[in-house]
Length: 95
Image 1 (cartoon, rainbow, N blue to C red):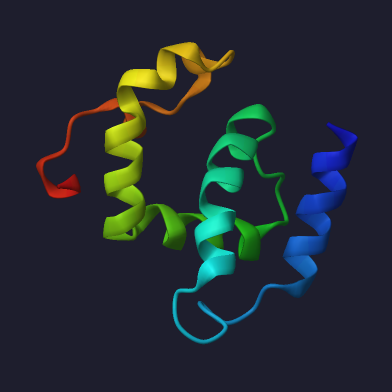
Image 2: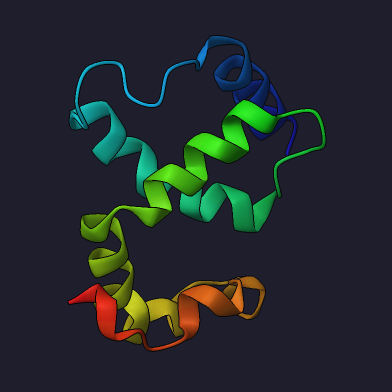
């Protein structure tokens, strides 16, 4: 958990504008990492930039679609009971 805290601090201190340019490969890599990291260790208070960035990622149609397609395999994630309900619900706008 200490490693995640350090990573959260680094991201919080460096993140600024919604996207550096356009949605890019770094954002594609960050989405799954932040999805699971936030379940293991929720973002601490005072990390508003990190929380907003994660929410922007999770709101992207492509990310929502990936989450929807991964839903059948969530049961294999060791902390599956901690996955927020909003990611478990079937949503018609994820196609």
